[in-house]
Image 1: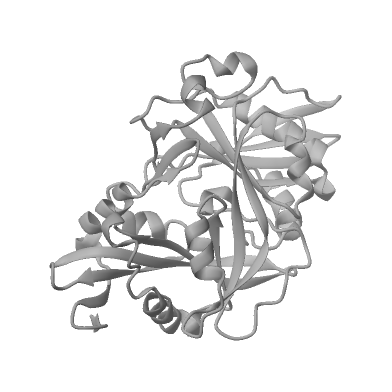
Image 2 (image 1 turned 45 degrees about the vertical axis):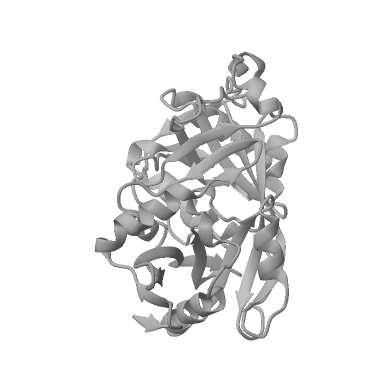
Length: 350
């Protein structure tokens, strides 16, 4: 435990602290038109660790009140950059209980300690901030001597969409399963993007979660349907504006996913590890449509693209509920070199 003042201290979280972490996640919600609580299940430490090789979570304690009032975390994982692997620390879970948010105590110290604990183990630090979270943007983007530098790397858009009837190219067939041919295809295409996992063995993915399109004896595109609900549940808190009225309509009839009732959890899955031959959006669209149509147990699918990714073309004419985040490199010295390839951050790792 590190004492910050007569009142506040910081400690590295252990599994015994999971109840405090759950309480912090329960107190937090994205309050846009669709209010969503991004939760971490019964064991937040385990959930965070599933986003990489390991996670470090710091708790901010109010010693006067004998309670945990905030947290900050980083997830260390291997990502692609320039055709090679870099060790990345994704800063996440910076949360403060509502009654303490105006004070925002000791945030610089949380970041400094996370940096000190990980500096020798990582090459790069990065994070995302929801575009609607203007308070966090003002706090973190403003240069401060006690804070790291935030270098803006563009906008990342998450699309929430319903499956549609697939249209396969002529002579093409859908394959299911992680075959040797699909593994070979990923070995050729995994490094097409920067900021993506350098491997396909994401936690919870089984062979049957992989789908690929084959034509003329060649794999043209592949993806996986990633069910993370057991350790990363999303709960609808409320609807605002037009979404309040729309939540009572059969939106699937109009091409959109139906909106769950407030208080319910979302039956979602992420589209992960999407790759296509030469980065072709048409092949990518075909495998996404085919894979999502085959998984009828999910009510909504999530797929995200950075603004640099040519696969954004998938949603030029497709109906979805989008939300956006700002992507940053975080540095205590010189910024990490800018990516020279499209950014392929996985929506399931946000």
